[in-house]
Image 1 (tube, rainbow, N blue to C red):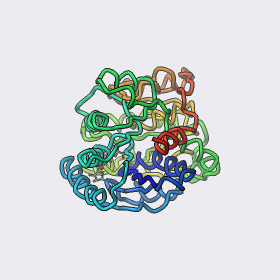
Image 2 (image 1 turned 135 degrees about the vertical axis):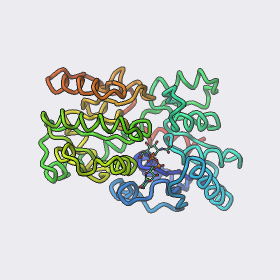
Image 3 (image 1 turned 135 degrees about the horizontal axis):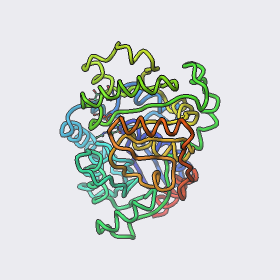
Image 4 (image 1 turned 45 degrees about the vertical axis):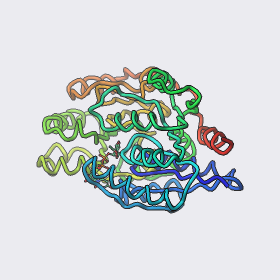
Length: 363
Ligand code: UD1
């Protein structure tokens, strides 16, 4: 019996491991698949609700590391995960995405000569000031199996000299979850709860430190809210980091905020409903660039670079930069009908977890 442990840590990991766990059920006579949650994200709304929405079992291991500086968080995950690996002795671990838990667990496994599979390998923003870029580079350098979502990943890994036999273009596993749960999202009452009409509201999400840790950015954001809320309703589920920074900047109860719907972080199904029905999404997230492209929803990415260029090349995403005046201009053009048409990238077909598990079960 092959023993495989998949690692989840932060919010964007859960929807990637859920379909992998389900796809492994087909092989349960020869693969024992376990889930380890590092506890990088721990609030109910950042973690537990995703397990419920995605119908995932309770994790087999919970490391409870919580927040901290990058070094503290990464080190704590490493110490706790090493204990799990020493006791469990798995044949392989699976890490997904680019969060601190991803790099921490791959490093520990690789030093114990346990094989590492990285799902969502090869993505590069070429911006090393982004902690995720460091996590991506290091994880890929020590992984044994690299599962790639888009063509740019193949090119990047080749440039970095990673042996082609380790690299597998399988598509986007997060889209497997989206496809599976879209029917449930159609039943969600979240639009009704917030008084929103389909295709008549803007969805904002902003949490990157490079944006929300800047006072100037937050000040400009207030102006953007004011200007765009004159045209459409705005809903803004606020990430804990952003919430803290807005409160520190004194924006909690200022008049511009009264014009928009501020919410706590929203669970997977309801958020999918909000994404699918938005007229326009304004975000600095990684995953939402891909989800909006799959759904054909207009998306403005408030960053200077993206590690997911296929969403701009063939999808509905536009990379506008962090100047919110430019964001406002493009947003208004979109609201006036100047939309970007897109297609669904290759192999984003809901079958990615099947391809990954078939390979790992037989290799
Ligand atoms: C992390 C990931 C980022 C991902 C994001 C999604 C890294 C380096 N960053 O960033 O790639 O896009 O998750 O959300 O791994 N906090 C809570 N409750 C929680 C978790 C965090 O209140 O459940 C607060 C803490 O004050 C913490 C802050 O949010 O200090 C930031 O959390 P952290 O996990 O450090 O990074 P994220 O910004 O969430």
